[in-house]
Length: 131
Image (cartoon, rainbow, N blue to C red):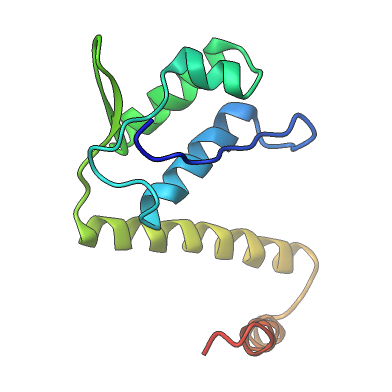
């Protein structure tokens, strides 16, 4: 591939292997490690590198293509799609929003009130010096 991007998967992770691949490639595109036109390893090569079955990597690439992150040229391979900076920012916000939704759901299930949740978020932001 044109950029040596490291993908790791774990059988012990509750997230399905194909989704681990999707998440990592998607993330690398969003932060600019992978850029428009960069080639990805072939489906077979990635399966071999990750010691998984071809169907797993094929499913991951299909998902990424369906979402518009990559495109495939028969006989040439798979490549990172051109995505506008505005779309990248929108995608980043979607990812963070989904994580926040999960945190809010967990807080609700555990009976943590809204004001306490806000305090927790502010505490974490300060701890991580994200201001």
